Image 1 (cartoon, one colour):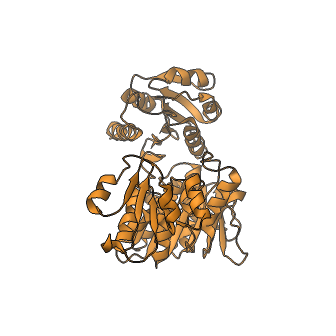
Image 2 (cartoon, one colour):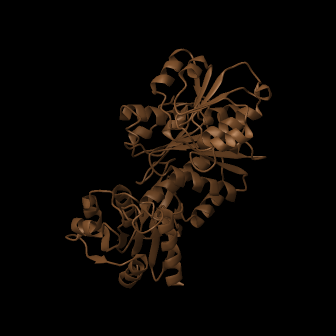
Image 3 (cartoon, helix red, strand yellow):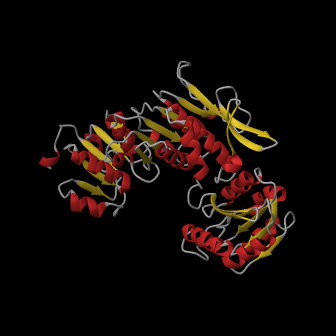
Length: 451
């Protein structure tokens, strides 16, 4: 261990995996001594740890209470609750707590944009990264998405860091002080971790601490920053914006992304589908502007951005019909959100391709949005009969033998102004290896058919 000793503080990394390993590499590079523990017998990353850092003490299969109580600092993975009795006791005895993002924040010397929210944070983070690249910035994007925060420090000559942060990560952050920070929205989530919505809300609000500019959702009171009035703040809304805020204005030419009364972009120029994604775009523009990114390149990147793979992803448009891959809609709620978000923006209707392994779900929630926006539901997979039972009174239903047949049927009945939406409301395992494989097949089959 001698090579790793750089101070006499006792540190324990609690939880391995991708995040824990990034902490191991960081502390080793800084020549700081530490131990590692994980409740799993064979956690991801253990082979690499033993190979590259053979001298590091490791405890597996449980939490080592003795190590925890001796520690000056616990570096806790986001997946482990601070309320875990052994960790709570160590904190009570005086151990400091940090996470990988806190270690990152202590080191970073360039501006950080920080993004959290119950929904949409990966889309906004990725879009903002594209906007920064278009503006000629050397940007590093990561955190809760893609690359762990500490690994981003290895990138040379970074102008700007963009971090997606979960509520779990925010629990252990003290030193963020972001150039711009947002809570996009707050809806009940992770209620197995938090005692109440109040606790969840408090965790999300930590993103605003010490920030130079706050961006919040005017339609969600839980996103409003609990900060001194002196902190500059910008709101976004799906309605008409106030003078210095971002919002949507409808006129005879369509729907516009606006800042105050200034029309920035007609949403017909966006490939990113759905009203919810128009709001995501507004939040990205507000964050980017707050951090000094020029508007023109941001709008240019926005027109090109097709969304995250398998999440309401624009696939193709032909004969006035847009084709959308939302294979990640593996549950009913996600499918409903896609139908409603897309339906609001169409002049026509939605042809929904759905079905698969429903995992015992109740499909009744699909009735209302399909009654409003549906042209037909094309069903595949094991739970097709259960979905039909739930929706056949409100929308025509067609059964197809497989995905190729479903695409053929959707192509046949869709009309100009319509969208064909793959949002299965089901897991994929009855027919495919994963939702990714299902989405990839859909994308390639559609492009082949429309070529």
